[in-house]
Image 1 (spheres, rainbow, N blue to C red):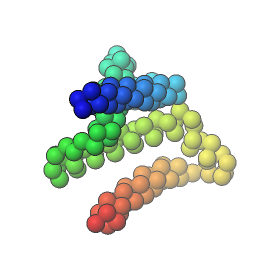
Image 2 (cartoon, rainbow, N blue to C red):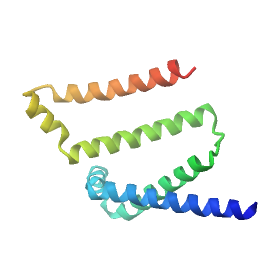
Image 3 (cartoon, one colour):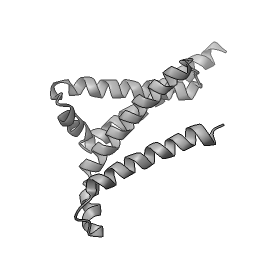
Length: 139
């Protein structure tokens, strides 16, 4: 039985490492790291940032694979949700900036003014949608 557990651990860590490596390579190939580093003004620590993202992705895969419950309570869940939301928002903003999403959209629909309001509306809609999902639909 212990051989099976060791093999599962090796397979899980290997799969997590492969997925994490592919994720980091995808983000790096789009130039999102350099954009985030430019926004954060911390270009000297890009290797540290990549390592942290790689380790976080691997740990997340292991936690998902083995269905590990982490007892952090309601406050911990709120803090984790805040950090996950900040990361997702930064990643989406950097990705849309890299692929020039909003300038292309504005040119296609002929929008000349009001882009900040559209961006704020997208963020507000995302926040309201998440709030409705978590507090009203998951009861």
